[in-house]
Structures are given as C-alpha cells and as structure tokens.
Image 1 (cartoon, rainbow, N blue to C red):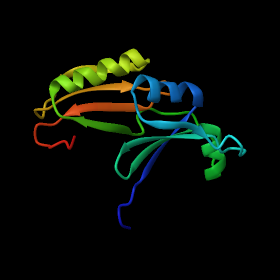
Image 2: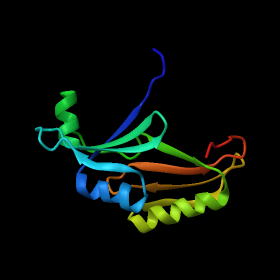
Image 3: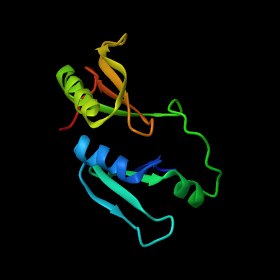
Length: 140
C-alpha cells in the first residue's frame, strides 16, 4: 500500500457543535456542512494542508456507512498531532482551543525528550496534541 491518506474523519455526536468548534473556534477553513440532501450524508470538510482534509461526520452515519455497530468513544484510541514552530505557538494554539470550548487535559509543558507540548480534547473527546519539536522543521 502506498501512503495516500487524504482525509481524517472524526465521528461526532453533534455536527453543528463540532462545525462551530473547528470553524469558528480554531479557524479551520471550510465550506460548512454539505450532503444534507442524503440520508447519512451530512458532513463537513476542513482544509488542513495541501492534500489533507479533516472531516466531521455524525457517529451514527459513520457506523452505518462502515456497517459496524456504534460503540462508546474512547479518547485514548488515537491522538492528532499538530506540530507548530515554537513554544509560544503551542501556548497560543492551546489558548485558542480553550477559548473555543476544548478541554485542556495537559497544559503546555517541557517534555522529557526536549520538546514542548500540551493536550486538549474537542467537544466530542477527540484528543489533540499541540507540540513543538526542536528536531522537526515545520513548513508554514
């Protein structure tokens, strides 16, 4: 398999609430909710970087499409890493997420490996790590 990941889809409990969090709170560009004319089709896409989008889709609809039973969410199943260019930017993004309604699970701090990071959860409990890695160059 060649790595061609183009969309990361998060199952959410309230599409409108999540749209407001990511669009209005975090400032991610989107055209809003589309596909409402289709049963199980309402979704919103956000541009992350060239070739990569974030999608939010109702959990019930995602389970229906994948033909699996909807289960209780677990925030420890995965995290999304958002790498930034400085410690100050970690602080800024974490504050922006907090103001948008995120739950800060770990405030920004120096890490054991020499970086600087913090964790927050979106309104559905999805875990994000905002991190500055001094060994990783971030393209602006």
